[in-house]
Image (tube, rainbow, N blue to C red; front, top):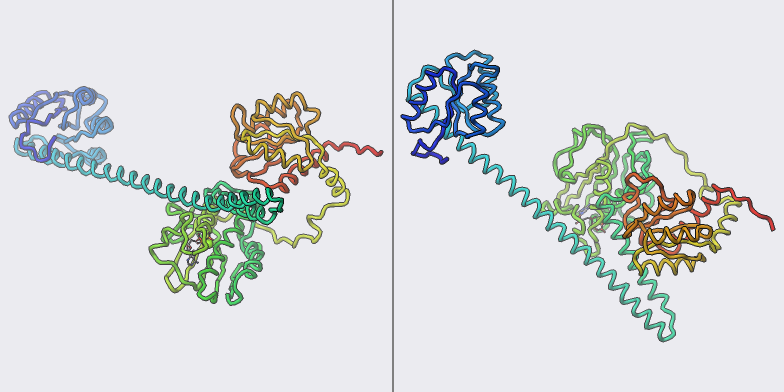
Length: 555
Ligand SMILES: Nc1ncnc2c1ncn2[C@@H]1O[C@H](COP(=O)(O)OP(=O)(O)OP(=O)(O)O)[C@@H](O)[C@H]1O
Ligand SMILES: [Mg+2]
């Protein structure tokens, strides 16, 4: 079909008319005008069938038809089959008909009796309008396609930027590790002690591990333990330390509601991290390290949160109460063109910045269904507002922890010291050979005897043979043949209370999601240090011994 086509005979018209004399007369007139007639039918059912068999370009539809369905029912079913324009032809229309007819969005009406010119005008206008609608629809579809393509492109670009930045940071840290290890080997070959150099290498690995951890937080893959908390209380507790690290010339002003206010359910450590990242940025923005930083906590309705400079950009706050934590500074502000980028990982304008403070804060806030807004004027300061949905529960005012909390009771300390001596056998399951060798050495240094397996299947076989000796299993989670979860289930089948520690490079909260018939006694995230490994095994063994209440043999 063409817009404004001069050869009208290109168009095929279906006539739906129960008066056969009138139908034949209409057909003659259409043929005289140069159109084709695809079919002439007398009922709605036949009209629908004809549209399916030989789709016309237009339907001339009588409204009142014989049979169960009338012309309006037929038109609405034809609309569902295909987007064919319909013109109603009728001698009688009441308001109810008109209302129903309108809902089927016809492209025209002709009243019987009609003359040839009037019919031709209605048909031509309908065909023209229909072809224009098709052109507009195609343009809209093309727009949607281009928009999706553009979003995909932006996503790929931003992923590329992020991967490049991660590689950049890791290569820098690896350079430090590699260089220092090489020098340490050199020192050793000359009989010198490389302790300082090795410490440098260790510091660099810690920094790399910190970046991985922050990336997981940014991706919303670290949840930690959730608890009901009052954000004002959290601010009051964190503020002294933050003030101590800030310049003495920065004045902090606070406006928090008294305790017992609206609560949120979140991980306290993560909320503290959000606060720390925002206050650190505010302090860093303060000109010549002077100025005031105002911290406010209040409650606002989701409907009142401005739809301006809101992050994540597609965040739609629920229409419930939100706790709003506001950090306002009088610093150098943010250029308008940068505001859209400041939450991108690794975007920084600071010579020593990593560009992870805000993305991490947003990653955390996002996991709780919240968002952050930014207002800033260059030279006049910035206001960051963190919004978190309020829980319906109320936090009771908590007294300070007793001073002796965390101190081991005498009997407990004695029991621990026995376990600390090691001596027990640990089954180590790890598919990466290098990691397995290293963890074996760590375990040996901690005083444990080690049995090794490279996957779950091998571990199961070793466990069957040595179950009387093995006191604890330390297993990687992602392994070929049989992963850590399947191994855990298999081991507990053999020995229902064998202590199992699972380990992974992913965050614990992500790993523990999902239905698993058995839970491990502990989780240890990679990379881990000797001290953390020792503590984890000791805790698991001591809990296991507590549960068993093994009588102590007095010699
Ligand atoms: N309060 C603020 N005033 C002015 N600029 C800010 C403020 N907060 C953030 N910015 C801008 O946003 C950028 C990103 O902040 P972000 O906290 O993510 O990274 P960073 O502070 O540069 O590095 P780091 O990883 O050490 O936090 C900053 O480099 C700075 O340009
Ligand atoms: Mg920062």
